[in-house]
Length: 52
Image (cartoon, rainbow, N blue to C red):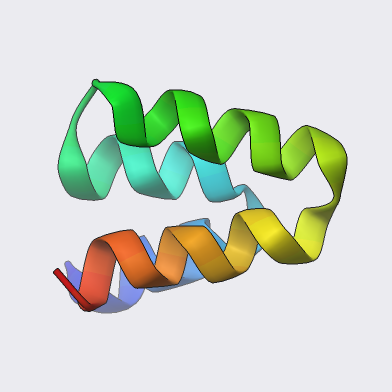
């Protein structure tokens, strides 16, 4: 399951965060960062799913 979440986080960061952490403020923050630029969304997604 971990590799699938990582792939989804890189391809579609909000979807990867939603699957990895569930709904909440993390997905909203990630959605905003992804809309501002794809790279910030990916960085935040990986941080949320694997550093916490």
